[in-house]
Length: 69
Image (cartoon, rainbow, N blue to C red):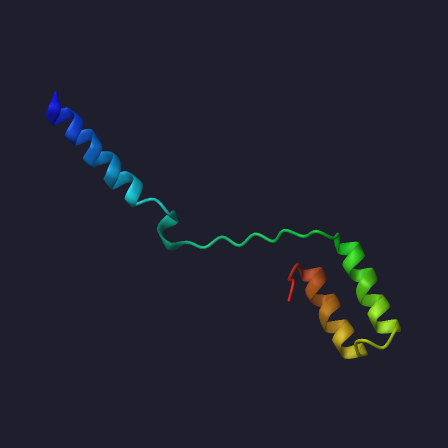
C-alpha cells in the first residue's frame, strides 16, 4: 500500500511540474474602454492639435487592427 501511495505522489509531482503550456505564450487584451470611445478620443486629440495627422492615421489603423500600441 505504501508503494502505491508513493507511486501516486511521484506521478502527481511529475505531472504538476510539467504543467505550464510548454512555453507557449497567450496574450489577452483587457480593455476598459470600447473601440468607439478610443476612436472618439483619438479624433478629439487630433482636433485639439495634440497629435498630428500622421500620428492620428497611424494610431487609428492600429486600433482598427486590434493593437494597443
